[in-house]
Amino acid sequence: MTRAALAIDLGGTELRAAVVEAMGRVAAFAATPTDALGGPQAVIAQMEALIGQVRAETPGASIVGLGIGAPGPLDPDAGVVVDAPTLQGWRDVPLAAILSERLGVQVKLENDANAAALGEWRFGAGQGTQSMVFITVSTGLGGGVIVDGHLLHGRRGLAGEIGHMTISERPERCACGGVGCWEAFASGTALAREAARLVASGDAPEMARLAGGRPVTGRHVAEAAQKGDVPALKLLDDEARWLGIGLTNLLHLYSPERLILGGGVGSLLPLMHETIKQTIRERAMSAFRDVPVVAAALGRNAGLVGAASLVLKGAA
Ligand SMILES: [Zn+2]
Image (cartoon, rainbow, N blue to C red):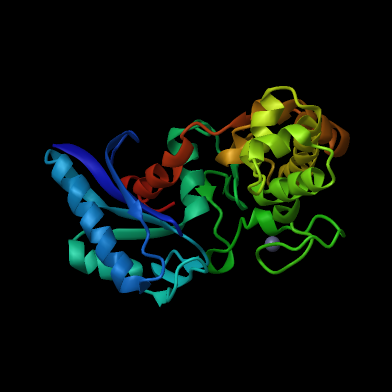
C-alpha cells in the first residue's frame, strides 16, 4: 500500500481534488466547475463526488487524511471557512469537521495561497530552504510566507496577506475595497487595466488587434510582448517594477533565502526578471540584493500538493 493523502483545492470557479503520494506525486486528479451559487451543502456534495472519483482510481493507496486549500479568511486551527467572498453562503462553515465525519479521516484546512506556498516549499522551487516567500500573481496577488521552517500564520491565520500591503498613494482601487494595495498595481487585473488604457488611447495597435474588440487581458499583453511589441514590453516593464518594489519589501520583512513567483503573470518571469532584479538592486539594503527570484515549479498543482502535505507531514 502506498501512503497518500486526499487533497481538495476549493476555488471560486473550479473545484479540484487529488490523491497525492508521500513524495508529492499526484496519483489521481479530478475537477469540476464549482457550484458557487449553490451554497456550502451543494459544494460539499461536489467534494464528496470528486473524492469518490479519485479514490476509485487509486485502490492501492493507504489514505492518511484530507488536506483542503480554501479561500480566506479562514481559521486553520478550527478548520472553519470564515467568509469566502467568491462563494455564496460560505460563512463560518466548519468544513474540516463536516468532511472528517463524512469521510472518516482526519481533515486539515489551510488558506489556498498558504497551501500553495507549502507545496512549493516542500516539493517545488522552495525545497531545501528554511525561509522563503511564495508570491502568486494572476487575477489577484497573494502568497504565503515560510520563516525559520514553518508557515507564518499570525493572528487568526491572517499573516502573509502580501497583496494588500499598501504601496502607493495613487488611488487605484483594490478588490479588497482599499486603495493603493500592491495587488492594485501588480496583479493581472492591474496589468489588464493599464493595457486597456493604452488600447483606448490608440497607442497599442498590436494589443488591440489581439483583443479583437473584446476586453484586453494580461494574456494579450504577454502574447504581444513575446513578439517584441514595444507598448506591451513597456507594460511588462512597469509590471516588473511594481513587482520589484513589493518584493523589496518582502526581502526586508522576512529575509527569505528565495522569492518564488507563480501564477499566470508570474509565469512571465523571464520577460520581467531583469527589471525586477534592477528594482531590487536600486531599493533593497545591500545584504538582501543577492536573494534569487525564481519561478514556481508546480504550476496549478502547488495548492493541491501543499494541502496534501498538511496531513502527510503533520500541521505546519
Ligand atoms: Zn487590497
